[in-house]
Length: 169
Image 1 (cartoon, rainbow, N blue to C red):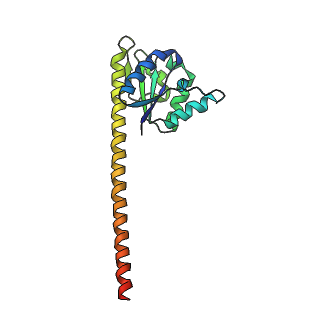
Image 2: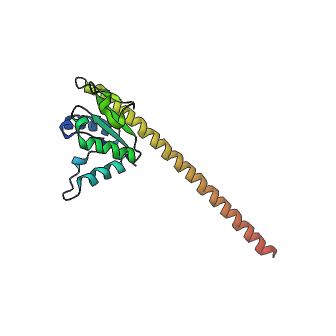
Image 3: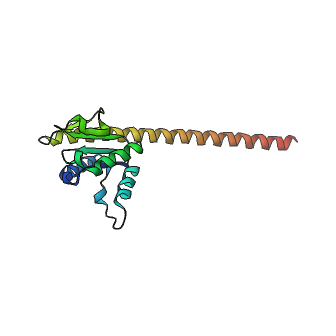
């Protein structure tokens, strides 16, 4: 199953979103950006919240534009409610007081003059989360296989004992 990342951002930061999405896709990550999915007639908040629910983590672009976006603030709140890991990317110069519910949380600093460095850090961290999820899925598959094998064995032993008791009786 693909690892999915929702990118919370101001629409004014579309260029940054595209750069980040390009790097993430190279790591095999599916990027969810609400406005990339056209759904005429659907409530915008429902569409956004649905994408957050379907994501494995949320990258929040807190640029000068993003920090002032009501949508970004709502998306952060919803991601926290859904218990999605948040990866804040905070533009250099933004006061920590403006981080609201993310105040005091660790973040990746974004320098608009050297964006590539921050985008690579963000992508590398997302890749590590993706690998961790894949390892957990493999472990679950192995555990499920072992459990199925043990159940199969116990069923065979029960059938053997029933078969033997039939001939003894």
